[in-house]
Length: 300
Image 1 (cartoon, rainbow, N blue to C red):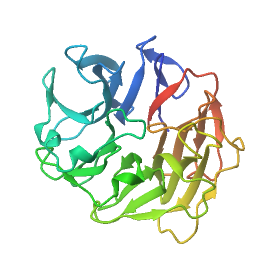
Image 2: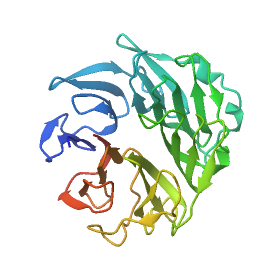
Image 3: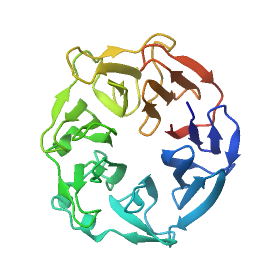
Image 4: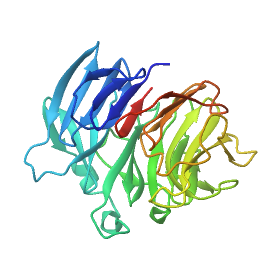
């Protein structure tokens, strides 16, 4: 299993060795360790390919919204921002995605504390559809490479924090929400909520490891009693807490972008500055690194 670790003090590999950008904050990662895109300091997009890192684009004026997330694909690279906007990489420029600005229902997007919403996570499925998770504004889908966007059926008040479209599972979307797991098998046309077995419902991150859903949950935004849970994809059993090799709980959220999986291999960065790995879809865990700067994102 190969990992990239994006921290507030640069990029590291799965062994903890620095790969560069020391002193700079890696806010989001996407792609794979051999070809990854990253948001740096909320102002720049960088690419790591063939062991070489290059800057791909920079936000313009300081008044431009900070960059929050990124997703690559055959049709191009899409970037989310604060204020709930999207940018598309065009050469070395970040171009506004007008269709997202015009999405129906935008006037209802909000945050619980009264600030502007944000594009919190992005995903692309095997068929090329794009998904944008707005906090707070639900999950939107584009079937035309971002030209137009429609809200999926997820209630925006579910307060989604991450959406993923796992490869090899046509139609499947999973979202971590303040009400637990949101699960769609039809590209977001309908959703089912599940908090069965969870000790709390405030979920911040989700991943699919083989046929096992991994979900990070806490009692609220402050991350009280944060823990990781697992459940089979078919949903025939409730969620169970991941305990073997892990602390009883964490004093802070296992956050969006900090939980990843590829087949039976999974990893997450805890708020305790440690990296945890599993080779059996989250049944057992091993602490492999400690003393990391704050981790904002992983790529596997």
